[in-house]
Length: 388
Image (tube, rainbow, N blue to C red; front, side, top):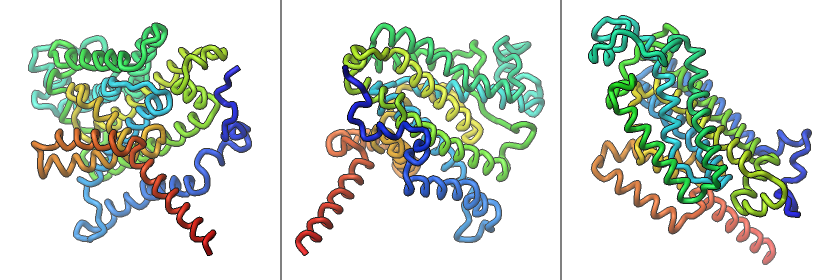
């Protein structure tokens, strides 16, 4: 009988006493501790304490940009779990990301209060459309706890229902990618409508405060940055824990030989559904963190191009590596920030060139290239020692 864990070098890592040490190793944990120190102590110090005229000062713009990219990195981790380790290419994660953003954006809009253009309890777009009251699905969204629950439940429930019927029907490969893309496009068209109560093509913007605290202060901006960084690190640890567990090994086996997994007594449906739903929830959380830092959420986040970009981040960094997904998100979005200022009309051509180059020359991404170079260096050092 085929066993996904048979002859696996990680088989012994499932012993409880060894799980924590097996997640990253000494070098990995050192990197995580260093990242936490930078996020929680170094960055706030350089932004809030070091004077603006100093060469060491980190500007508010840099804080916002890095916070936005960290949200994208969380989203890339969600994609890597479902694509890199389970072999399911989703082109619908832009919808989950945007739904999480809209769920928290509803709370942010309620926090504006009477500070809008029309000085009404209703958001400006509702006043402009002559709405007299909030629709029923806006109920309780003025409570941050309820909004946080929506951030998790809306993409989670949608992913569970959609995934159950798709996986039960054994839809896979390019067909699954197409229907997830269609789902995202349908949501984008829905949210573009003014009568849905989500701001139409303008979406939500002009946020004022969170839990009564002004949102545009340096302190709040840094608080959001730190929270996003901690969520990113926590998501990485959770993802690593999952993929190095028996559950993760079964996911990898499903990716490589799903029919053999079925014949061995495992039901791929529930494994795929579990990781698909978790991935959607992580994407929704990333969207919720993204909205207050960027200051806007609109249906453009559900565009087909957005979902394709997410896959490109993971491919560039290295699919099935987790760290590669984070690296890819930083590399591509860092390049995007520069290109859209210096050569805005050429950005999409550059993005397409990156994807083609990675597909042809770096099938394992940047992380795969670094591993290859490291192995060559080790082999050269060994050859020199033998020769000596």
